[in-house]
Length: 415
Figure 1 (cartoon, rainbow, N blue to C red):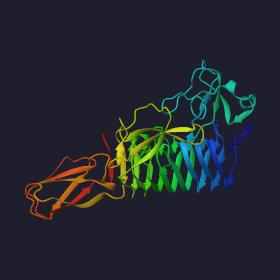
Figure 2 (cartoon, one colour):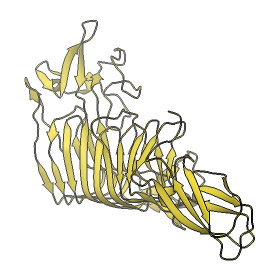
Figure 3 (cartoon, rainbow, N blue to C red):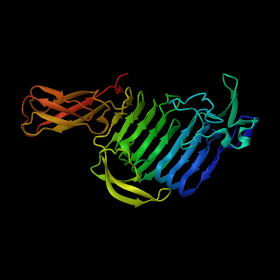
Figure 4 (spheres, rainbow, N blue to C red):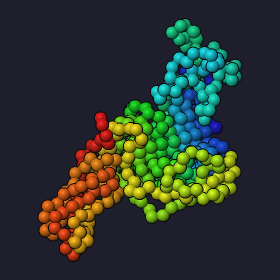
């Protein structure tokens, strides 16, 4: 673990510009943990050529002013939950007991109290060493008075950012995420990601701020984890997608904002093996088929269930269930294709591949046939296909040029 120190009488000015290089860790619960629950002041650390394998979580970064954490050529493999887990914290109350009133709540409605890193149990003042709650300690805990004049002990809070260059990641665990963040900011420049599980999840519905998540040049083979989503953006964002290839959906929450510059989608014609925790009893997507087999795995569980997973068909941008108002801003506003019509046909179904797949059917279609088609019209306009109809039956060698166009700034639903 890499953590900041405890300071008395002054505000923190913790570790600065530290460098860690050539570290190899395997067969543990958490590989490298940076920061801590109390919000240490850690700035400018660099991790170079680190390798973490067969773990529950590869790299876990926590805190508030844990900023400019840079990873160069990290490798993380066979992680059961997350390759990189990013946990930014707001200020949280450290209660004496469950009987003490809760002063505030998190932005997502949860009680704003100090929890353990896995958020499974609350940490009370009685759990802390005496020196951490002593009157002279001003960081990373501090005292303040509430509206009734009673003193309240707090843990530090704030944002967190991580930059990753040259990421190499692989995991067979279907319920894992390569990058799992609440509202800490992550920038990834060039990544090769193989195996199963999701690629990137921003899980807390926080408002857009001065910073953005960036995924650039992501070469991925993921089938989208348990729900068929390679990326889930639950908050406003923004998220920049620069280049990259995705084989699963990019799911957007209400008012999410995405700038997509050259990102494309593809569907392989194969299924893949993946692992689930033994005893996993939640409903599974129809893409996932149980095999009845188990497999030995390293780290905590020892055994896992093997399943087969089919990639989502025609992946693209979609809305998360129950959400609307997401926006996708693309550099390319059109897609062109030429499709063939069989002899005597009077309609053709046109599949929208690659960037043409939209979160909805809010686009325009222009059709130019190479034969006298008579009247031409479009029906069944959907997010992944359209049907082009024409009055005159198609002759041999008939083709139609199809242009799909949309506004450069688009909404996925009601404002």
